[in-house]
Length: 394
Image 1 (cartoon, helix red, strand yellow):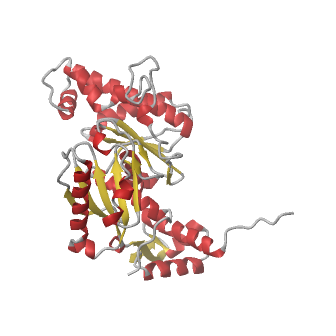
Image 2: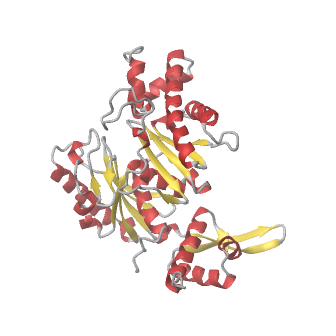
Image 3: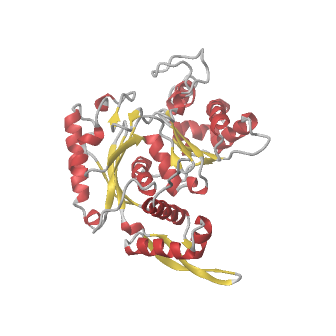
């Protein structure tokens, strides 16, 4: 019989180290709690903790007490030990920033040249902004893991290429990771903004409470991010979460993706605004529509209800296939979003196949500011906490 060879000692040590890091990131824990959570011996946990403290990654933050007395010193992630360099590309603006391991935005800069008709000029402006950022006093005191780039999809994650996002022609077919390895260094990764936001939510938002969830970004389009067993689901080349291009009406209008009846055509904020302006031609913005709905306007309330039902319809399909623990909503719908959230949850609970067994909660994201940069940083933090990136030695 052939002997089955398991992981070697070095690989086991690496896996255990990552388990400790991920647990402490979710919540400060004592050494005894880490031993219980991981199943490792107290001695093994002490060795791992000592190594991580020596590297400056973990720090002691006080004692934990219970009714039985002292339980031990709490360990937490040291936010000053490293950071992620972040680049957010959107249709309206470009930003660069530094985000620490606790999700705090340390520094950010807008990039001039967004309106440039030349890709080369836009890339040069980004390079200049990155260099200025890295020359700042905050950046010089930090160890950065790499550059995360958040961009509208579709994005080919494996080759680091922005493909052909609608209304984003300046960046079509751009090998963005290759273009920015100087000045950013070797570790440059790109993902679509929804996938990055799912990672940001996992490490700094509601996603810290669960290992399996779906995030939906509802703004100029509809994007999705799927986290399964604490890992981002990319698919083969990074197209594994295009929920916005899931059809809810195969006889519906043609989408620019080539499919008919995509949920984006019914539930994106521009789509809802277009329908609202048939009744209110001078309606200025999404916020104005929501304000009217909260003020009791029946037309605007009906339009928000129809939007929520379209979103719930596609989420029922997702829940029936993947059975996540929770759904997180973000984007334009965060503005006074409780009415919308509650309606989505109501329809989802009525239609999901597991409705008789458990309730899948729907949350509004707690990440409200600079979420393009948080999405970009989330791409790097995912690589770090999965063991693909190491902090540079100083």
